[in-house]
Image 1 (cartoon, rainbow, N blue to C red):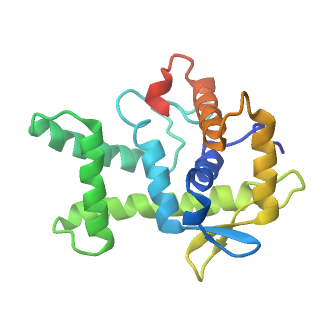
Image 2 (image 1 turned 135 degrees about the vertical axis):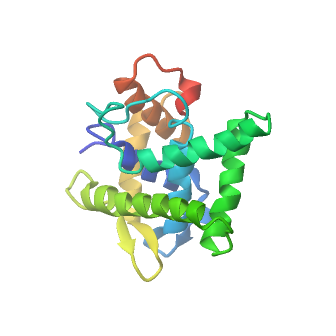
Amino acid sequence: MRLHDNQSIYDLATIRAFFEKDRQDIASSSSTLHISMVDLIDAWISYFWPIFIGDFISLKRFESLDRPMISFRNNLSELIDYFESLEKEQKNDNPIQAYDLFRNKLSLTRSNRIIDRNLGNKIQTVLSQIEKTILTSTVRNFKDINGRSVFQYDPKLKSIKIESASYNWLESEIDKLRKNGESNQIVITNLWLSLIQEFNTFLIKDKIS
């Protein structure tokens, strides 16, 4: 399998998280790179948050408003609507500020200091859904060209890890798609945009990046 063939949005979200973080920010050994599950979940939320704002955007073939296929779409969308409504009540309709408010409540939820327990439970549900999706989709199904699993879960460190050989394979696949000296991040972002636009030809790129 090549990086750009039959790739799921889930796989690209995980790849994007690894390559957008500085190598120095990723726990590493001589042969393995790790991203904590917490950091990976946060990255996924930041990628899907803008997509779930406003009109429905399909992220899988045959996905529709009546047939959502992204496991955490409904619950994360509900949180987005909630935090956007808070901003609108304050006459400050700004999705970025709504996201920052969510991040604050997310931190309180993780430290068990959130006062609104119902909201905390809703946030925890989304976190659990995303973690399960990472483990049952990308970790289980994403293989390199030789059929080896690219990502593994490390229960001791509570992280997703990638062996150097698989990381190098990803870099080689990215290099094949590189144009005019683009960075790895730009190549992956373009893959992300292309996959989404395949199912949503009307989209403006700024909406989904």
